[in-house]
Figure 1 (tube, rainbow, N blue to C red):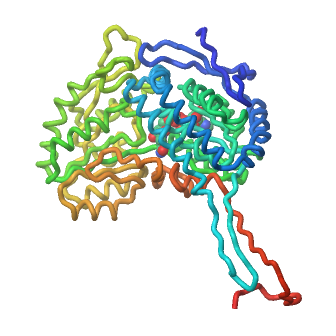
Figure 2: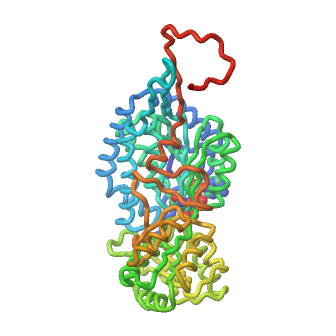
Figure 3: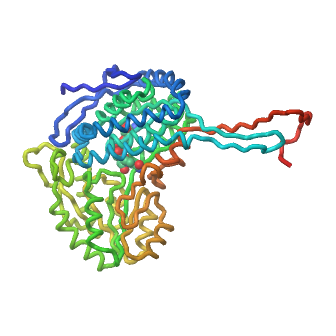
Length: 500
Ligand code: NAD
C-alpha cells in the first residue's frame, strides 16, 4: 500500500475517507502507484453538501468586493506556489513541467477574471417604467453548486468552474478526477490561506458513486461537468431530472485544415505542437489534419514525418521533452489499440510510435508519436476520440470537402484553418459549425474573459464556461417591479397590466 493516503477537503479540513473504497493514483513517469484516493460514498457527499449549504449563506451576504479580495490573494498564492503546483500536477498527470505550469496559469487567469466579477453582477434598472413604477433586476447566487472534472487539466478546469461560481456567492463542491486529485486538494488549502471561509470550497474525491450522489442531491442547484461525451450526456440528463442547471462538456476531434496557400512550415510547427503536446491528451488537441489538394497533402506529409520521428518523449521532469507519458497504463493500451484498429481499417500508418520505451523508465506509460495517412471518414480512428499522440491525415479535394468534414463530425469543440487567403478565412469563420475557431492558430482556447465551449456532442447545455456565460450560469436573475403609490388610486384591476 502506498504511504500517501489522500483525503477529502470539507469545511476547511482534510477529512479521511470513510467509505472503505479507494482508487490508486499512479505516477505515469515511472508506472508506480504513489497514493490512494478515497472514493466517497453517497453519505459522505451529502455531509459535504450540508457543510457547504451552511457556509453559503454568510458567503452570499459578504459584499462582492470582499469576495473579490479573496481572489486577489488567491491569485498571488497561485503565483507563489506555481513551481510546487506544476511539479505535483506533472507527477500525477504525466505532462511536462512547463506544460503543467500552463495548466495552472490558465486556471489562474480565470481566478483573475473572478476579481472583476462584482462589475458583472450588477443588475439593471428602469426608472418610471410606468406611473410611479420602477423595475430592477438582480443576479443572485444559486446556493450550493458542484463541479465534476476530468484528469487532463487538474488545475485549470476545477478553477474554470469554481472561481466564477464562488465569486458569484455560491458554495462549491468539486469532484475532481480520481486519477490526479492532489492539485485540487492543494487548491483547497490555498483558497483557505487566501481567506475563503471554511465550507465555501470543498473537495470530495470519488468515482461514479460520488457523481451520482451529486446529480441526485436536491440541495445542489447546478452542476458543471467536463469529461468524455457519453458521461457528459449522462450527467446532463440525470442532473436535469432533479431540476438542476447542468452544463456538460464532452470530447473532441479537432480538425486543422491546411489550404494549398498556407505557410507550410508554420502549419507543420502548429500541427506538431497542437497534436502531440501533452501527449495529445487535450480536448483542444488537433487530431485530424486536412490538407486541401494533393500537393498540400504531400508537402505536409513530407515535412511531418521527420518531425514526428524526432519528437522527444521523456519523463515529466525532463526539461527538454516535447511530451511525457500517458496518464495510466489502461489509457496507453487503449490508445495503442486504436493504432491497431487504424491499420485493420486500412489507414496507412506512416509513423508508428507504439514500441517506444523510455530508457530508465521502462514501466512508465510512454509511447511515441504516430501518423496515419489516407484516413477516411468511415473509420473508427476518425470518428472516435483517441486522446493520445496519434495524428490522422484526411485528404480533401477542395475547401468545401474540408469544411464539410468539420461540420459533419459528431464532435465540434475546436477547429483551425491555415491559409494566407483572407476571403477563405472569413468564410470559414462564418460557416464552420464548431464552437471555437482558429485562423492560423492551432489551439484557439479563448482567454478567461471570453467563453469556452464546443457544439454538438462536445457540449450539452446552453451556456459556456468562464467569461460572461459563467456569471449567467452561476446566478439567477430576479426582477423586481416596484411602485410607491404617492396618491395614484387605480382600484382593482382585472386585466393583465399593460403600459399604455
Ligand atoms: P471521464 O469522462 O472519464 O471523467 C470525467 C469525470 O467523470 C471524472 O471526474 C470521473 O470521475 C467521472 N466519471 C467517469 N466515469 C463516470 C461514470 N461512469 N459515471 C459518472 N461519472 C463518471 O473523462 P477523462 O478521461 O477524465 O477526461 C478526458 C475527457 O475529457 C476527454 O474526452 C476530453 O476530450 C474531455 N475534455 C473535454 C473538455 C471540454 O471542455 N470540452 C476539456 C477537457 C477534457
